[in-house]
Image (cartoon, rainbow, N blue to C red; front, side, top):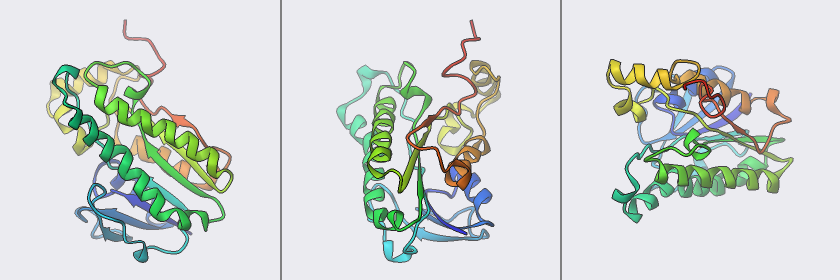
Length: 232
């Protein structure tokens, strides 16, 4: 049974992942709220990734899997973005991720082979209007993950999931009516937007021994958007 730490996990992709992992692993969720997870087989640790220091005394000495889930979807025209907006997105998506990994690095190294899963976005590889801030932050994650995977191989595996728009509370304003949902589905070659389970399934695979020969990769779980040109 593996010890898996989810940073964030009370809603969206994290909640879907926790539900999948809870019975065959010891799952620890560090998040601001334990809403939706109170009845689950998990251990909750109060934690805000942007302001708090993770209390590692509440964690086991060995961590076999780490998933960092906090993120942002800050879509605005570049001319209206102040440098502070870029700093905020970078803080939530990347700097806080670095702090978490550094705080639990001894626990990860203590595992026979641990797995880190982090999240980018389809916007980091595709030029998309109004995505300059979030694409910059997610691009930092992709470069960091590859370098970290190289530095800690074979002890720690590091992989990235780059989703397209997924039906989570974070994306609610983009999917909060039927017209938006239909337009979003139509933009994807597979003719639907993502579900939390689509992304959670990939994360669970990357945490498992079935992916033990995979590291330093970016997986585009995006309904074919990043590679299939069918909407012409």
